[in-house]
Length: 144
Image (cartoon, rainbow, N blue to C red; front, side, top):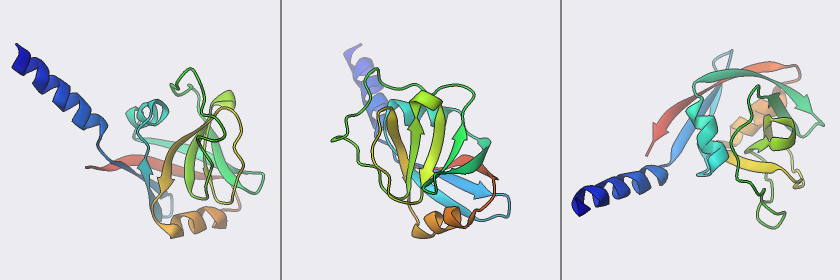
């Protein structure tokens, strides 16, 4: 019995330690990849894939999309000192149920959770080029 329990615990913890890569594809075939974080909100987002969503520009700093259903998050949001948003971050803003991607530097605000980060530098450039609303498709492409 102890061996079986140990096996299941080992399997559970090794699953949590996997690197998950999500590919975001534009309708024109261009794409970029995001290495996902290992947190509750990111895991909830991953569980909903594949999915497509429409993004628009917000404030000349980020591309955002509203989710119909909120992502699961810890009861307490990270403090400013725990998460400093970076260019290329994929994020969730809980108060508005928005997911988004930063293409310029952004200050931390309460309720912001990092879901992942763009791996390729040209992914940020692809986002900057989008002047109109656009659709991205997200799907898991790699689990290590």
